[in-house]
Image (cartoon, rainbow, N blue to C red; front, side):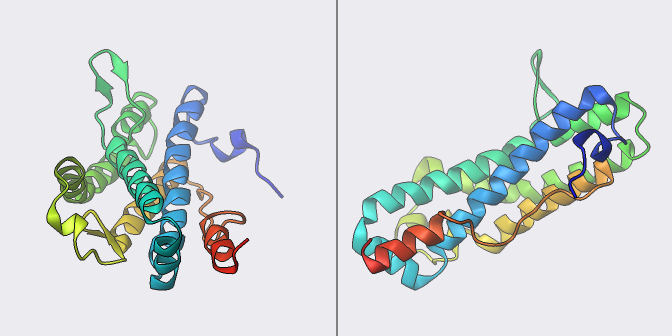
Amino acid sequence: MSMDSNDRLSGLRPEDHAYFEALENRVSQAHFEFCEYRDLFYESDSVDTLNATAPYFFSIVQRALISSIFTTIRGLCDPAMTGKKENISFAGLAARLHAGSHPRGDLFKALSDDYCRSAKPVCTVVSKRIAHQDVEHIIGADSTKSFGVHGDELEKLIKDAAQALDFASNTTTIYPLGPHLNGASEVVRRLRIGV
C-alpha cells in the first residue's frame, strides 16, 4: 500500500512539499550512486574484471560516481541562500521549517548543523584530492577508499542525511538496500561471462 505524498508530508507546509521532495531526491540519488559504486569497486574480483575489460573507462566511471556523491553531500551543506538564489540544502529546509513555525524546526536546524560539521572534513579531503590528484589517490589505492575516504564514511553520511529528512517529515525516507537490476552488479556479471 503506497502512501500519498501529501499524506506523507502532512507535517510540512504545502508550499514546502516540493522543496522537501527535491532535497529527498538528492539524498536518494546519492544513495543509488553509492550502491552502484560499491557494487563496482568494493570487491577485488569485480575490480579485476573491470581492469581486464576497460580500465581507463571504469576509472572515469569511478571518478564520476564519487564526484557526484560528494557534490551532493557538499550541496546538502550549502547555505540557505547564495546571493538572491535559494539553495536546496539542509539550511534551506531549516529556514523554511522555522518560517512555518514547524514544531521540529529548531531541532532540525541543530541536526543539520551537526550533519554539516561531520561532512565538512570528508568534503575537504575529497575537494583537495579531486583538484590536486594527490599521489595517495592515484597509487596504491585501497579498494574500499576513494579520494582518501573510506566507503563506510560515505554510506554513513548518506544514511545520516536520510535520517535527518525522516526527522523533519516524521516519516521514513525510502532507502532501498539491495542491488539494482541491470545496474553495476549486472555489468560485472555480464563482463565475467562475456555477454
